[in-house]
Each structure stands twice: as structure tokens, then as C-alpha cells.
Amino acid sequence: MGLVDLRCVAKAFGPVVAVDRVSLSIEKGEFVALLGPSGCGKTTTLRMIAGLEVPDDGEIHLAGRRVFSAQERIVVPPQRRNVGMVFQSYALWPHMTVFENVAFGLRVQRKPRSVIRSEVRTVLAYMQLEDLERRYPHELSGGQQQRVALARMIVARPAVFLMDEPLSNLDAKLRTEMRAELKRLHRDLTATTVYVTHDQLEALTLASRIVVMKDGTIQQDAAPSTLYERPANLFVAEFVGSYPVNLIEGRLAVEHGRACFVHPEVVVPTEGPPSATGEELMLAIRPEDVVLVPGEVPPPAGEGGCLTATVKAVFPAGRESTAHVDVGGRTWTVVFGKGIAIEVGDRVNLFLPSARILLYRRDTGELVRERSAGP
Image 1 (cartoon, rainbow, N blue to C red):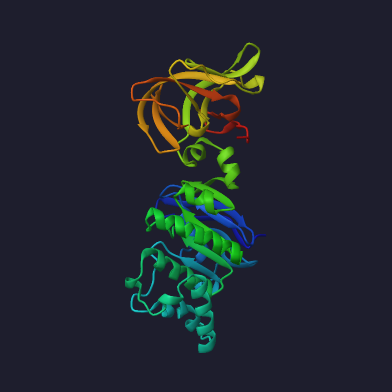
Image 2: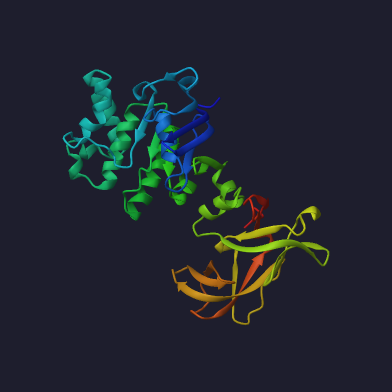
């Protein structure tokens, strides 16, 4: 049993099923991100852990204690679950100073004034807020307000940190800074954290485990590297990554004694069970794994397939640029480095290394062939 255990937890709002019998176990010290598009059930799951939403079915255990059971009719209120929560909107008291906001929870617990003063100032110093303790929320930047919200949670020393898209209201620069703060926070405090986000970059850079959700169900639960290298299905493959994964339809066939992915414009040698020959598949390859070859330059050595595409748009970005190209009516994204000069309308070759492709069943979206974990 983990520090946080959800067992077949379900929640519906009228006819809409928000969470569909989700089971999840989180160990002490883990940083688990719940990742998915809007409406996938991630925030509802977090709020059920916190006690802000009451599930319709299942059980929830925190630190070995059952805090919810539909069968036993157990519902432990939020204030008795020993969890702390940071909201997207910060939820600071506007009429209280920074010090008073952070101290609020300790005062509710009727801690002695000397203890409150000592613990609050220690946490304010840790969060680099010691010079702002007399200011009010409206006098703070977005990043400072988020630090206050984090400090208020930390000072109560909960067993579990719950965070609901805490960086979504910040600009790009502040989000980067706050991601570093959250990494430091987790490293220093070894805090068990459940973090809700729709931003896959946040999940990949912060979490030790990522739980990808869709339509109230878990699609994949894995370490960031596993999620990136071996997406369990087409939904995960398309959702996770700095750029959208590139897709093309085809089938598995035998060419020259080898199992191959076959499309009218490209044949890519691969590995596949003979019994699967003829199966309709989707080839997926990440933009950074496609090798763009301009003009008449021959494709690189190595096993793979090569197809022709037309450049639709180019986005120079210094050391690394991207291009949108037309591949059989589909728009692909390709990442390429300095030294390659292409323009809109150019015909280019795209080399698809066999080791870097993923194959999925077209009917179910299930992964049937992983890509190599190498560079």
C-alpha cells in the first residue's frame, strides 16, 4: 500500500462520468503528475484525494488510513486528511499580509504565538519571501503570490502536497523559474506530491511518474522517459512530446524476407510477428527523429525508409529550427539543425530510421512495436 491509494474510485456529475473506476498507488516521496486535456478527470481525482469532492464509488487511503469508502460510508473531511493544497488561483486572503496568510493554518490549529512566528519566518526565508512579510497579495507579482501559497502549504507540514495547475496563471519566464522552485522544494523536503497539469513539458520536467488520463480513465502510468520512448497507445503518443508526433497509415508486410511497414510512398524495415502480416497499422515518429535531407542530397546510411515531402512553413529558431511539411495530405513537423537551408515549396526527403519508429494498431491504437531507447 502506498502513501496515497485510490481503489476503483468513480465520480459522475449527472450523465457525465468524470472519473471512471480509477485505481492508483503513490509511494512516499514520489512526485506524480496527473496529465491530460481539459475534462479528462485529473482535477476531479485530485479534489477527491483532498476531500473537496465526494466519490460515488471506491475507496481512498492516505498514509494507511481509510479516508473514504463508499461501501462503509466513510467520508473523512478535508481538514482531517493531513493534506495541503495549492490552487490555480493562489486563493490568498486579500486582507491579510504575507505573514498572516502563511500563519493562518497554524493559528487555526491554535499553535503558540512563538511557534507560529518561528515556523512562518523559517518557511518565508526558505521561499525567499522574508522581505515581503508585511505586504498584501495585491502588492505582489504572480510569482511571489505563488510562493506565498506554497509557503502556506509547507508550514502546515502535510503528509501529501496537492497542486492543481499552480503555474498556469504565470507568464513563460515565471513558469520556468517556478518549475525550478518546485524541483528544489521536492528535492529538499522529499515531499509526496500529486500535481495536476495539462502542460506535458511541466509533467516531463517535474515528475518522477506521470499518469496520463483521458475520459476519466488512466491511459498510461510510467516514468517520464518510459512515457516518451514507449507511449502505450496513440493518444499518449500524440499528447506527450514537445511537438506533435508524426503519423502515417500503412500495413505490415514481408519485403525481401523482412517484416516491413509498407505505405505507398515508403517502406520501413521493422520487426513483427509473421502472424501479424497484413495488419493495418499507424507509424508514429517524433519530429526530432526524422532526418530532413534537402534537395538531391542522398539519405544517410542506416536502416530505414525515405519519403518525399513538400515544405509548407519554416520556423527558424537559432540552433534548432522546425518545418511543417506535407506528407500524403498530412502535415508533419520536422526538427532540423543549422546548416540546412530550405524554403516554402521545396521538395525534401525525410529519412525515417527503423530504430526510431513506433507502430500502433489502427483499430485500437495499441502499441505493437517500440522504438529504440537510444539517441
